[in-house]
Length: 627
Image (cartoon, rainbow, N blue to C red; front, side):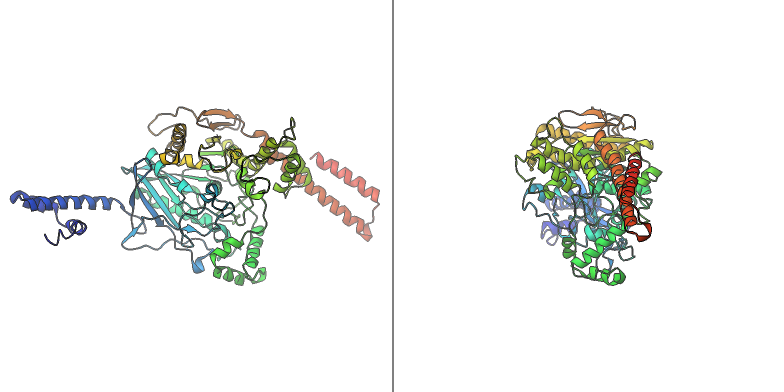
């Protein structure tokens, strides 16, 4: 007894191994204070052991021990934080596709948030919370291929699963951010959330088309994490046949890539895409362009940069400090032009997204997708910081507006720029500085985010899939950015994860209720495939209509009014998806004809008169205009 009671902790440890039945019989035969105390101690020990045992789960690679966490709502969830799903991609494994983690013996302690993958840290606005909230909040490392599982209490037996893929332009992001904390969502909606880490920047998307540097490594990381979830989630109380991928920005584009990939399609059920898809102009680049960017990166960090000596280039890049890689990969790019992104590699992705949608080469399933009202301002403030300052009362005169259109669309020819200026000008008051400012946001937001999401929804609806489209229009009452920035890219995330229910954050009561509705929509969709229909057969107060090719219904998400509408940004997206491509095509054809005529003019064997060439060009121009 002296040994047993030396300390309470030691006593509990020893008492765990004393049969409770034997002690109870002994105490009944010889009741006394010591016996009663001993019986109580051993009872507590057995309860503690049972609690600890419930947090130990067997996976296909070994046992993992989790931890019980308390949400800001004081509800508890069980969590397994930082479970390894792949071998650390270090040394010779840098840039390679992930390899499965080796099995382990004993119990892996999954009780702390995992490392973030190497990425650049945003210091553009110094310590401004609106920007730094997206920076990594755990140690950055190449050893970062981990995932976390959050499960409601009591533990379900066949729960729907939401698997979160973070955004960040494929150059940044981490699942550990406070804004992505799923404890409130999990406990409020009784659903399992899996949150994964994947490699970003050159470490995740460098492409040379070799076994060493095959490209799309970050997508293969995601694929392995999804495969792990499909294999193991049943041990945590989840349904492996009901996994919904959800993500925002590059995370949403990733979800759509998995909808396209023949390697991913059979591993999950459906997808939620917030503010982007694979059709976004920044989401994918040609292999040749990606290859050249890789050589430019090699030169920037002091490595050989010759295509003919590729093995030396790769070895040098493998030996280079990862911080130097991710910080030196930023060359001179346009707005929303990120250095290293997915490519068509012939395996994970076999054709361009637009072509795949046209050919019906995608997973036929339900999708939920949408956009925010001011998608463009976040990116404009970084790209045109001299005009768009982080302060109130920012205005844009007419001259600045027209020049900004050109600066923000530097790859388009003059006729296309004129069409863009015409579309986004308020001709009732073209000099209005507020209208001009806001028009630039809509221009960037439409081209870079909104129209790709709307086009994706349309193509899916045309295939007969159920599509639910939203337009998010609520500006948070605790928003850190200037008022004129409106409802920015990423603003919906805190409401999806239930942050307003954290009283310490200071949200308004109506925002708490609004967040509950958003969580209910997302969870309903994961459970039933319909955001309006709960698993228990009840329906949401505000019905979310199916988006069809004929009416193009969508739901406006706002705490004051949830209402249906139709034809979201239809006119503006017709400009970007139909007119601008035609203008660019015709312009390129005309330039080719002019060049050909100039070559004919300078050819000694094919001399032609100036007037004849002019007439020919005019005739060809007329023909092209009518195409």
